[in-house]
Image (tube, rainbow, N blue to C red; front, side, top):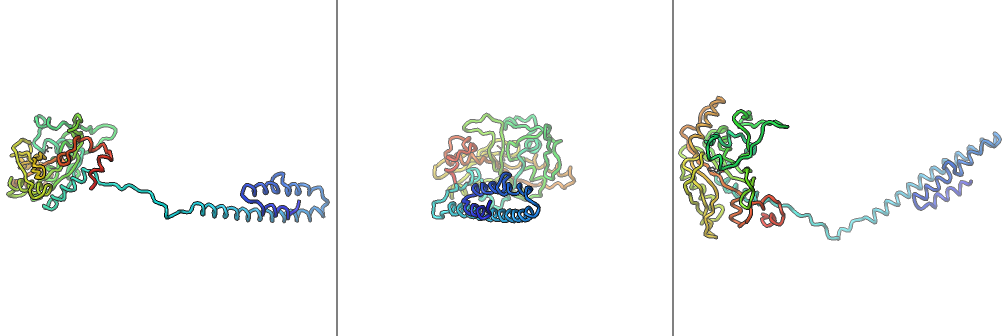
Length: 354
Ligand code: PHE
């Protein structure tokens, strides 16, 4: 074999595959150089030594040439790929669709803005609630027929993952009754009152759950906004004023509120309220309200006393309201089916992007 021939072949290899071929041809197990080395043994000692030295030198030279050529071929391949794949910044780009707020969030945002302006704090509570906060402390004992107005999802404490329902101070309240998915946000009236000293005004937005057959006007999950104001000398006139203010916030300065007597165990007197929608000349039935029932103040003070806290609700009065969030949207936009809200079809949701 000849060194110059080997080097020339290496130089001429135009790609990695061809180069590998050259490598095998010279250095492979039956390669030319390997063969030449194998015949060394047949030569006389002096010649063998000289020839061995030369062949070893050739081997080193060939290996180095192979390496250099391989590096050059790889660099060229990369160069070619980069120029082929270069980005044409003048091509039109992809459109990334931007998200938007859900209709429920938009309505809630609007409601909360109005109440923040009136000095209310926004607080939230747990969705898995103690029977005690959801019913008993709200003057709805177990036997009370009013419990039937709110068909309830009951939750087992036991099971693969036992859990604890925490009271307002992080204490377990499992001993106070069963666990439910809250049927309304009114339980937060109790939780908040226990942990705070009046006066205060809060609103509580949140999900609520009812064990109901679903149809166009019933969903098993929907949202409420609860309001609670407690202090000295708070009257029904303040309640009326706040609901009127809400009506004006939602429907402009012609907006107003209407109260009709009704019953809820946790208020006395109790009303259902509607708001006047001037543009359509319609009353919209939006929720319930009333003066906080004295039973609640006693239950709250008892709970505080049990924990060594002073009774602070004697001589206090207050009012509360609760309204349906989806309901407001349904009436205002004429949405024919409440189930549209959480099917998450974009064709529905996009119509209400803020
Ligand atoms: N919690 C009641 C309901 O879900 C609404 C309500 C709240 C009524 C506060 C009066 C006072 O129907």
